[in-house]
Amino acid sequence: MLLYLVCVFTAILLLYLGHRSRKNLLPLPPGPRRLPLIGHLLAMPSSYEWETYMTWIQQYNSDILHLNVVGTSVIVLSSMQTAIDLINAVTRPPMPMVNELMGWDFHFGFIKYGERWRNLRRLFYQTFNPTAALKQYPKEHAACHELLRRLVRDPENFVHHFRHMTGEVILWAAYGIVIRPENDPHVKRAEDALRAMAHAIIPGSLIGPGLHSGLEIPSGMVPGAGFKRLAREWRELSELMIDAPFAEVKRNMAAGTAPIFFTSTQLGNIRHRDEERAVKEVAGAMYVSGVDTTMSTISYFVLAMLSNPDAQRKAQEEIDSVVGDGRLPTSADEALLPFVFSLVKEVFRWIPSGPVAVARFIEAEDEYHGYRIPAKSIVMVNVWAIFHDETTYPDSHSFKPERWLLDGKPNLAMGSPLDAAFGVCPRKQFAYSSVWITIASILATFDITKAVDENGDIIEPTYEYLSAMVTQPLPFKCSITPRSADAERLISETILVENA
Image 1 (cartoon, rainbow, N blue to C red):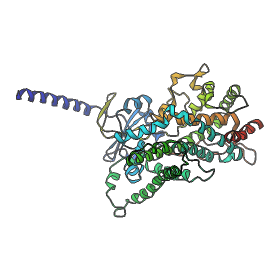
Image 2 (image 1 turned 45 degrees about the vertical axis):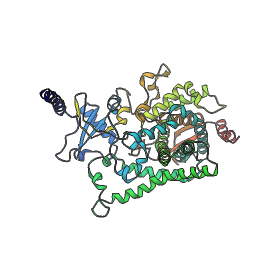
Image 3 (image 1 turned 60 degrees about the horizontal axis):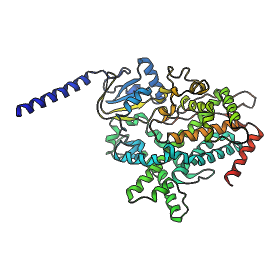
Image 4 (image 1 turned 180 degrees about the vertical axis):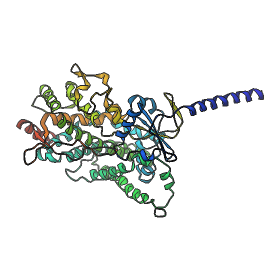
């Protein structure tokens, strides 16, 4: 019997070693030539990294790349198929600067998959699933109408108005808080915290052992440990961002004036302190997950209309024929406006607000299409490359809504850019519906044209944008004017309806 067990164990061991040896003999995915010890450290781009990654995938004719940065393996995926195939095998990478030092571990999008992640995501999904998102339509419409009124009064500050609108919608959904018309402190806190986080989550902050060991180094004892002091300052921003609106809801509940929305509803059902903490964390995640991306997407829509005035004209003609001039578009009109539907999809694709998805982490060694995927690799999905694949999107740098149509109807075979832009994020439908109603309403009531200088010469936009985790256009000038006196009247009447 003992001899039998020894034979079985030996056979299993040989199979395991053989399987492991076969994997170790597999080649790594292609990538640039690397240097001893530091690998690709000097080749890693410090900005617009998605464009560099795309150049490499074209150079090596591969939609999967391997980079080695001081011993850390980085896998870059540049097609929907590779992302779909490998995404289920990954979790989130260690992010000590962002999570442990800056306190962003309240956001389930940045923590390792597990029981806590599942609980927080489940709570989040209760508000942002497609069915629940329907409940947000009235607020989205009201905020959109306020945006239109602001554009009439002060069209030059359109980006500021976009940020105000997105903050208004999300703060209402998460907390039932009505923000101030100007200089709202909740919006300002979110801007400050998001700006700090964007600096910390660049790919370099995920790579190498420095930040892990740095957690135990008192700042001031070694050169370069000043990041701890900076992290403390940034942590104060993130804590204030989620603490202040949560405390306001609790005060309103005590006074009996809190509207029935996510935070107040969930707090009414809690049984112990851990559940209260989860509610605060999820409410904070709701707020920070959509402010910058939605604002950025709508800003790119304005640039797109400057790039392709004919697309704007076609969309306006379609709205005029379906909606008419006696009312503003509503979400119920979406299915009747295929060109507008396609235009919105093209806005998400043309210049994605999140060109590289939040990094993931593969813990166990894997094999993919004959390549070895090393254990503990950081996995990055290059959304920019997916959206600018010339095979799928010919003339990809041009804004062409018609690429999503077939015989005047939505071409379902093209899929949706939301799949790459949001992945499995549960706020996908919420973000899309807010962008759709905003774009449709602006098209119905305004003309967006290139600005002119004091000599009457056209000011050509550069179409340049900021390199960041969430990109946004660099400041540009344009002209946003009501299409007619009737359109301006229709906008002004929206306040009468909402105050009725």
